[in-house]
Image (cartoon, rainbow, N blue to C red):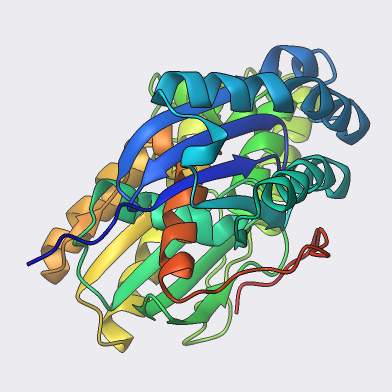
Length: 340
């Protein structure tokens, strides 16, 4: 039997502050995964400055793609398609990647594939676990999004729940800031939490109305800020590690509980954790334990694949390539692109 020809995809990801390019063959073989980080630049501002991010993407995009091709030992003529994130994200940052990808696709006369950023995070799981059982309940947690997605197949998905206010990652970053931790706050807060007692402070859990699979972390964030303000006003000494650990425990409990509820309400065969916050070790451990108790396998991509990268975009693009889901060359950036 003749083997199917290999499909080589160059993917570009510039949705926030990482300029990334990857070359992936058949959705699983990562030949190159290059990331130019801007963390050092934005750290002095305490967060991402969109205009500065866009400027750095413009400076980095050409050398990053060149490095990816060199690492893969390939040339532009070896590519079968060009994939790019077109939303959601910072509009200026997205436009840099889009402009480059569209120009390249046009010059090479190759298909252009527009990829949803959150779908890319989900497909980081398939990059590492190609035979991940479907249907799957996917918990996607990042700085701007917290969603529960029922992935019935590679062509069918629906939202089971989403954040109504602050996403989990956003809450992590804001609490980290008030604790005086440097940017990016999430990993720093997790590091501090390891030194604290997660049961020291009983911060609230927002379960919302009965049966809801939506999330809300704004109240929890406010509770932590109020706790710290009250301590400052009364001259009470605060154990910052206990605050971090107790806050993290509250977030993780809600995320894990609602994910298991979602899995039990659907014909789920597996649970997938995705997004930048999926690198959090406490969340990974607690969800794995809850999955074992529920009799469901839990798949967590390696931490390096949880944060923004282009290999995950290439993996998602591969499944779109198989069904010829190509984008027109007038594809535009959509900063608030929904995940239907």
